[in-house]
Length: 381
Image (cartoon, rainbow, N blue to C red; front, side, top):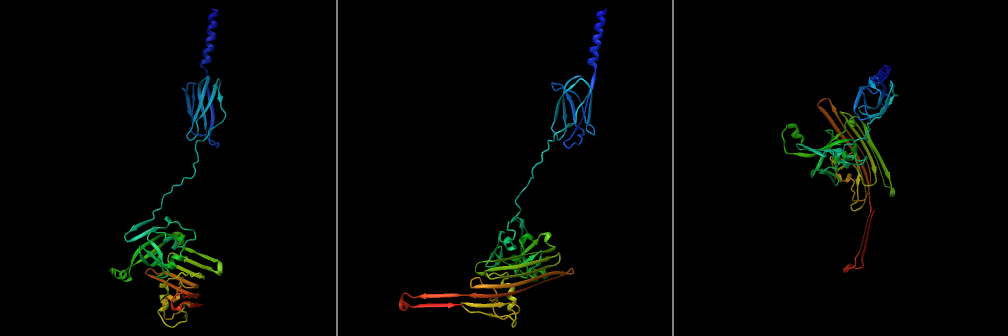
């Protein structure tokens, strides 16, 4: 009987020991101590079979109850973070230290997506070139830019597009420096240009009557970038070198939505100017005035200035890079504006002063014929 009592007593102790359960609790946070809300927390046996599990609260806390005594593997999973594993032994209620998860998110380097810019588009008879597709130096002017575009060249100082001379260059659809394409391209910075349009402009009579008389001229329209359509911009330049050669100039532009105002001044002694022959045709159109032009055929020096005119060829007022050394002082002003809704005004004025110095030396030595031994020496200064 006593033996039966002992057996019953010890069986009761074993039953109570195996029937007792505990809880496992703790708190889970991210790397910056923010609570890991909704993280998955599970307890696994040594063979990775599932025992119990739960998710964390809005403050990152968790509690798994009714866990039998034994050794387990605690696994925590949370989106964007590395899975966390910890071996735990449960023989009583267990409160774990704060668990901080490690992020798996990696910060990528900057991603650059590059593609070739569209060089040109065609709409009707208008070819539109994208300025961004052509690389030029930071101090480049419009001429440097457009001559990189297919079909646009500068031959003997004249701008040509698609094999024809460009008669006029507009800026945002408005006349700029009259009919002088050279002045526009040389004095407008390339950085302000968004695109360049090349088209055949109908004659004024055709535009007025609406009847195409067949007379058109190759024209360039420079479309400026939005940020340059309101404001003041320009450039100054200068240089001095060997044999007292120099070059200097200033270009100032003031643009608004309705108005364009540009002033340019240049001075050099390297046979360079910004005005073409078309600008100076008006100089020859009247008689009298206060200009002077004196020259020496075959050599010598000549000076010319613009402020009236004297009959003669407009070439007298131009720099000829083939003959002599030219000192040039020139200035130009351009103004265009919209007066009201239907009236537009455009005007340009040029002043050009040149001093041409040329020296020629001619030496002949006859070695045959009746003039054998004769020498001829000529100097023109």
